[in-house]
Amino acid sequence: MSDENTNPEGGAQQPAAQGADAQKTAAPKMNVLTQFIRDMSFENILAQRGTGGEVTPDVQVAVNLDAKKRSQEHQFEVATKLNITSRNKGSEENLFLLELEYVGVFHIENVPDDQMHPFLLIECPRMVFPFVRRIVSDITRDGGFPPLNLETIDFVQLYRNEIMRRQAEASKGDIKHDA
Image (cartoon, rainbow, N blue to C red):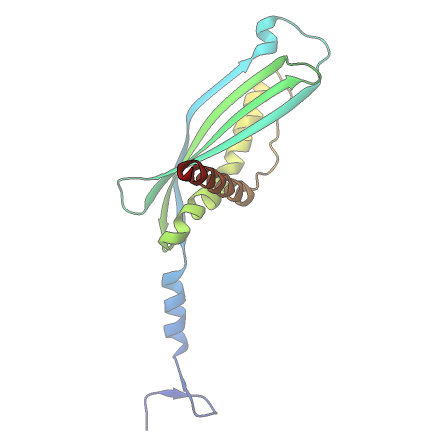
């Protein structure tokens, strides 16, 4: 008698437990170790001018992401930087400026090296975004404006746009370099 499991067709099968263990060890693991505001600035320009009256805000949000490996094994720091400008529609008059750098420190395991860059710039910011949204809402409300509730940011599209921008810059550099 053989120790090998066989299926009815006569072929060998792997034990189910062995396949489950292989999947367990390969699954990516991510823990948020800490998150904090590294830098924040809010300027209520409307109050500084002492003007009031009817305003129709036009809000522009710029997002920048940065990731780096920390000295501890499997730890990474991901910074989400927001630059939010609110202008009065139809004029160049600024109402407020908000700059925020929010950092998350993550413990990440079992992510292949070729997938680590997108993982850091997509999944990590997605995990801390609700906290960023809350801070922006509270700061604008406390600054004398209606709370600004940020729309959900599509970090996948943001990542793709940045890759395409870098590729376009590289191809321009190649053209200039060859000429």
